[in-house]
Image 1 (cartoon, rainbow, N blue to C red):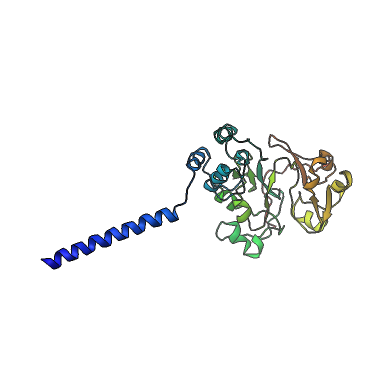
Image 2: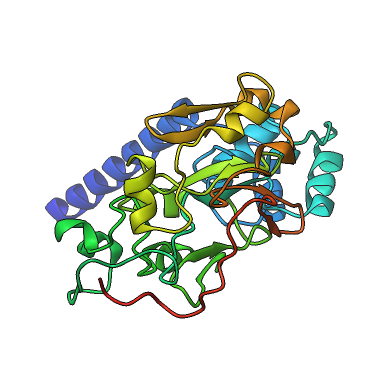
Length: 288
């Protein structure tokens, strides 16, 4: 009987010792977390899209509470909710220009030739592994919708010609389409970048135009007509210097013969220059 009481006493003493150790450890290792973080996180969209440049809404909330970032940096949240966060924390709203994903290709099936028929897995990444996917323009969009598939915000759809269309109102600039595109055709831009080269083809003009009606031919007219330094022809492609975006205007697009360089209106309309060839073909080009 004595041995039983000894064992029980030992276990009780051991339990008490461990409890004290845990209490001391908790006091020494405890990390205070501001309760406002949870409240601020509840006011964020919880999209974890990364459009703000931070990896997730929770870390963003932590930075907001610390005063390291402004609520307006979240372009996915509504302005009303961002204002509510700013008022709650007693900080300035701040602002960050909305960014969207843009596609550097306008070569849908009605204007760009296919030179080989691909019959494998319907994925741009898979097709690109088989001789580039069969499109005559080796830089062009393959149109199988990997970008639309990975978009969690339903911001990308394929039009009737197999070309991705980005809904700027829904796009959060998360960058998933940028990552998934095997042709590196997507990039993220602030919406004030309204001058856009919808092409990435580096072939010389005649060769490129033989494969696609709306290719940039590197004719240089956009560079000649624009303020000096805004556009340059680099590796047979017009390239816009967005550090000079303040001087950009529609004058750059007016003489583009193929309409490869366009002006993007705030309402989403794509404006081509007066000299751009008219595309009237509605059906897909035959397999060449």
